[in-house]
Image (cartoon, rainbow over all chains, first blue to last red; front, top):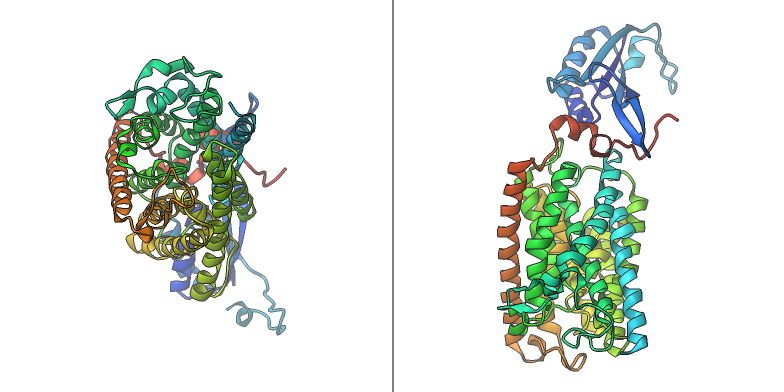
Length: 113
Length: 410
């Protein structure tokens, strides 16, 4: 089991969701986050006082999948979120130790999908 | 000079200011994404500053100054020369000329502000500023002269536009459509509206617009009299009917009556009654409100999606289409029994009035389309109207104003 964490551009969420659904990945958690990568932040000005290094809004997806779904999930996210410029985001893949479905108390691989 | 009239028009002037800022600003501001809300508030605020100055320097003189062949006012009233406490009987015999000028100033301010809805979330601030000044000078001022100025050629035809259905709403609405088409869609737009970030702002803005519109319409009587009273009642009645009708249509068509629907319907009603409010009776105003809700609903919810242009906040769908409905309705429902200085419409046996209304509409549309296209091309060639793709994605608040409306983490 793997946990896939993807940080993407907010306006690409719909496209990524569509691509994920097309390959059978329907379960995900979405949060709005702040961050900066190679795109760097931005400068804000309030009554003449400059503040450099402001963070940009991004969207974070948390998706738990079984091994056979890892590659297609990565490809779907990449396809949906890609524009080719800096700021498109990143995908992290982590080992997942356990998964429990609260409603049925199922555990492990059968609890994921 | 009449102190009652003067007091009412002064108050009405402040009402109409409230329509732009904060009314329209919050109506539009709530509809955009959170990363662009300040850009909308900024554009509305700066228009209030810039057009107020333009109007005093030369705008008022171009629109209402001494006539030059029915086409434009001359510059003899530039800098408000000859515009003082003495009334000008060509426009309003019972109030100071300066009060009439100030009242008209607020109309000149809100009209280019309405266009913001078409290029919201993707226009470069510097380009927006230059375009706005050019549009006010070369579209609004001449059109206001033709329809309202003493000696204006459309006025001489006998066309009726009580408070600006043509001059304000059709002109801005049609220009908005041109800009939405030439500027292209927002990144990520695909035939459905991008979700509004704060509907309570939009509802607040719509309510302030309704309130301010009493100054816009009833104030256009330029007197505290029976015609002002009629305009007040027809304005409220048409607006109520349109808000209710929109909610019912939506309930039947989509399954739920939405608050954005009621607010949009009410604004469409306000727009449609604007040219008619001083000429029609309250029952016909109710009818106009119902018709405009139906027509604008089809324009916004069905036709826009099919044609695929991105009129971000529906300036064309509500103001262009609503203003058209109102202008034609004036040619049908106007009656001399309501206002002896007006005329009878089709329903009261005067086919000619409907024809004149249609001529005025065609002229305004052709003029606004051609001029807006030319002005867009000029500004786009000099500095580019649209922001870079990267800046559009990050948002206009951070890239154009260097500010953020909301903190995510303190």
